[in-house]
Image 1: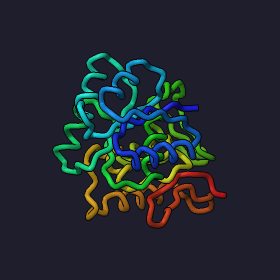
Image 2: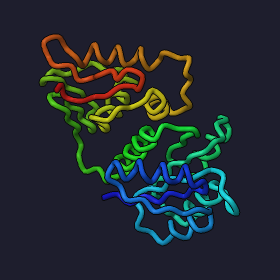
Image 3: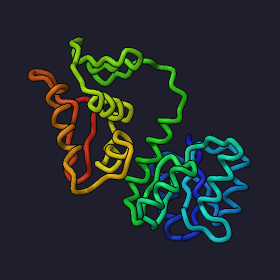
Length: 225
């Protein structure tokens, strides 16, 4: 059962985070200040840290900087009301693994935590598999029903992200930031275009659909029910 350290000074937000993580089978401890959070984090034993950007006494940036200087590689999800691009970039460059702005949907927060936990889990496999869809991580080859698929580099990265998080609903923001590597522009349809192209290659006629649209939420790659 993953152990999460929630460093958050706002009581209401902290309760929401802890409750949502518990609903997803995780155990969460809470620290209300940056200094207390740093002390608990350095004591070790946590699989992930959610870190508020603005904390009394010691800011979230100071906390994560101190952690990385001590060579702690525990994944950190930064949470902040500061949504400006410069602030997000600053948080990520300081050592954050992901950045979520307030207000946020609790289920997206939990999904981001699950993604980070998977990403930092030691990976021994060299092949991903969902139903009859396979991805060879060594040769960068994709196969559906044993037949090779011709994928462009971005399509390959998109498929790998979907397969690594199979069964999870991934928002457009999460997909854009993890596959393209920069902040999502709500006005762009680039994700829908690439999903459409990938779907035409993956969901071959006569085979069950694997890429599913979750209206109002995003996309999910999973075997057909």
